Length: 269
Image 1: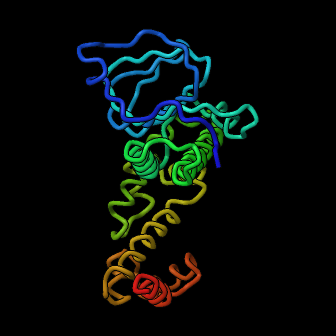
Image 2: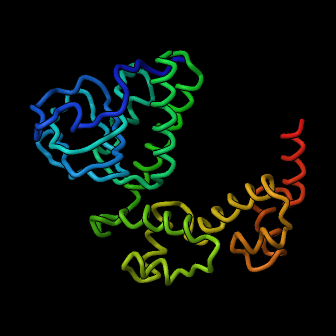
């Protein structure tokens, strides 16, 4: 299944590509240029508009745009040509030129695995792995584009910046008793406003996201350790084993014990 033609890909480091330089000259873009910034202190100029780059952000350049870069930054990048009939061409045309992404961890893992695969095995337009990762990337771009549109202009211009920070904080502290007030205080907003913005952008409440992170960690402990259900419940931040079991079944449609047995049998088969 060929989605499009990959023109260029790799890891771009301005200090290596342009040692001693401060910026590039203007150039006209001839393909879709998707860049995920690993580190950045510079800017990207698109059609005369300068965007301040930051780690964990994405730029989507479109054919016909005039671009230049002000150093320094490091990014993963892919350059694509898509057929006119492709729905993904319309998707990329409607994607913001530059925006703060929501799930940095998901994008980072996606780009890392995609570029590593290409550098190791080369580019095969019919590769199932390549096309699956590309579709996954389109999924995240579509979701984040929609989330940006869902945010009213009355929100602060930096409205999305605290969302990735809140997600990272939840991932690092899911085992603790986290309150809406604590998350809102870290973001610098009232609890009601924080809950409203987080739910609007993410399509789920902060509590729902916290529960998902706890379930994700519990799945690993169920398969990779012999800890009891009560130990796992405590380690993942659930108030009791019964609460853990209810939440787990609601999320996975199986009890923790059933999940453990099914997956252990699969690995031992």
